Image 1: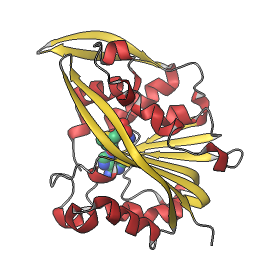
Image 2: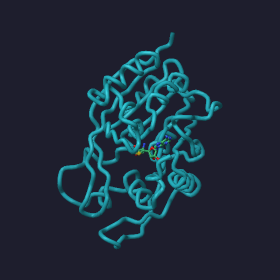
Image 3: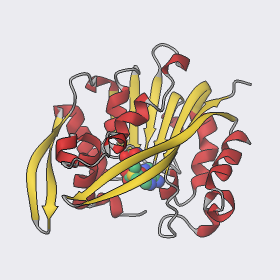
Image 4: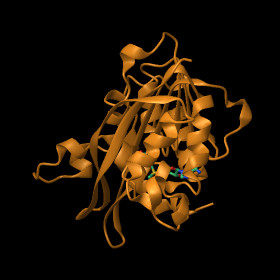
Length: 251
Ligand SMILES: C[S@@+](CC[C@H](N)C(=O)[O-])C[C@H]1O[C@@H](n2cnc3c(N)ncnc32)[C@H](O)[C@@H]1O
């Protein structure tokens, strides 16, 4: 299993990516606002709440340090966040228990500013649980969900098809799946012959084929979602994820 997401540098990057205000994340006047608050937008733009039943249950796969899962507690009765990084899940659990967590915001070189990320007051912390788990080999007794999020996860898996195959049993009939991915295929994560869409010639077609074929999903909508990850005060990763919302067909 890859250890990239266990490092302190990545923990701090993701805490800021998920929770930092614009002033802390990008204190410049360049027009970038549409790329901020990605993990929050994944919930509020990604899920069609009109299609959900009452007392709905949600799953955030590859939840990292938890922002989307916390966000979903405002609309779902219960939410499970799963990530294979123990470092990230430990951070999400501290946020669940205390509502805040220390973070080091790297300025440059060895200089960083110690501060805190804080959950917003609308978050219902008692509705969420976090656990370490492998999205390609989830525990059998996880149950099923009215909504599953898998944001920027699929191109980090060693076998994306394994997850796509499991989704039809994770998402209830008429339930929703929301995915984002920049399709950043890397052989260090995914062997080339498993890149979706004929070695990534057309990754979205590959994704669609898998989900609409045996997966039993129908595509409701797909669009572009920019996001910004801060590395240090003068370096940012700007990416554009392919976002897609699916419904599981009730047969
Ligand atoms: C690019 S990050 C995206 C995190 C979050 N969903 C977001 O949009 O900010 C990928 C995440 O997936 C997690 N991850 C990678 N492979 C995984 C696997 N096999 N099972 C569960 N989580 C995994 C990593 O630890 C990391 O938190």
